[in-house]
Length: 155
Image (cartoon, rainbow, N blue to C red; front, top):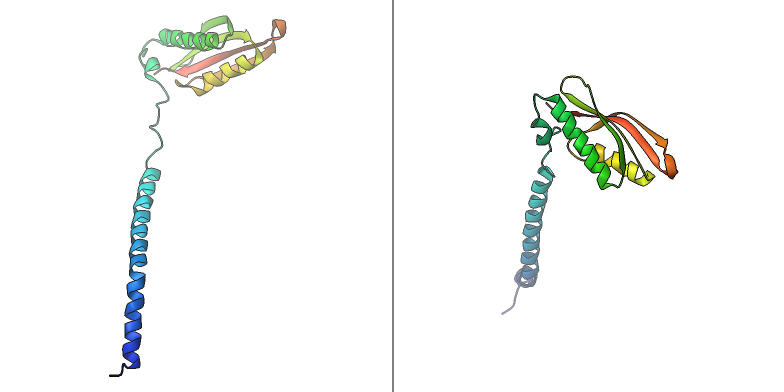
């Protein structure tokens, strides 16, 4: 019996399909894994990286109704940040501020790097504190003196 050309082609095609089938199934598994990983990455990208922190922290809100207490809390924060950096607190003075704000005038001195680190920490770390006025001057003994007025919302 003689096999026709069409039969030989069909047999050859089936043989090739049988040889390729394991690799095709492997590729489909990898495609499924890639789609799952892509979906996970998309869901991670859609989520916020971290919860937004309120601008006015609870420590300041606890003093609602009393601007003097809010100014004292700000004064204590300035003193603790300065002393933890090895700075000398020369002056802390409560100041009057517009409604909803607490203000403290301060003067600190110490090594230049420590004073700059203090200014960075006060402005960067929560709760929100901004320097309304500030000035650097040459201190005694080669150090630096920083003076300014720190302001924070408390309502």
